[in-house]
Amino acid sequence: MPAKKRAPEKIKPLKPSGKRDENFFELVFEVARQIPKGRVTSYGAIAASLGTKSSARLVGWAMNGAGRVRPKVPAHRVVNRIGMLSGKHHFSPPGMMEKLLKKEGIKIKDDQVQDFKKLFWDPVQELGF
DNA sequence: CGCCTGACGAAAC
DNA sequence: GGTTTCGCCAGGC
Image 1 (tube, rainbow, N blue to C red):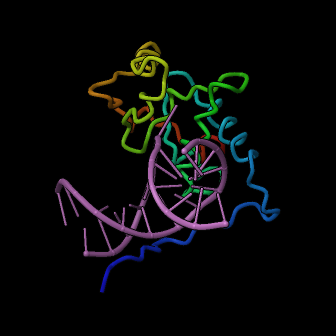
Image 2 (cartoon, rainbow, N blue to C red):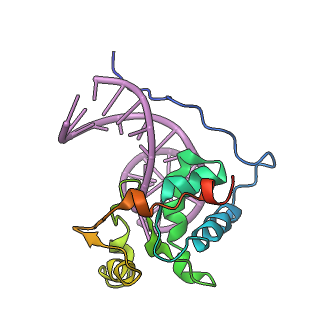
């Protein structure tokens, strides 16, 4: 029997209104803007704070528009859950993300954030969600 | 109109 | 324990 069914944890429904259009993106940007300087968070953490922890990909997708919203969203402070700069390839110069992070005092080693766990900023915890 | 891809995550194998 | 697959939603082709 082909193990092709993964439904581990059930995700909670989105807004009762069913409105999950660009509003979701706005929320992502809002949370991302709350990231303090010198700190980092993960896509999944943001998604979780919005109530859609399974939609971590959407957070990343939302970041695609991070550069076209104002004020600019510090997308460079958002990395995946292991602290890897998965999104560096999406910056103008791929090294920009790392550069910005280092500028804030964050050490990067091989596309990975050092002391990620220590620098991790959990929106759910910090924002009190 | 349908299939594939994508800056993730987590379980299944 | 590394690899694979699924789910999420949206957009591109």
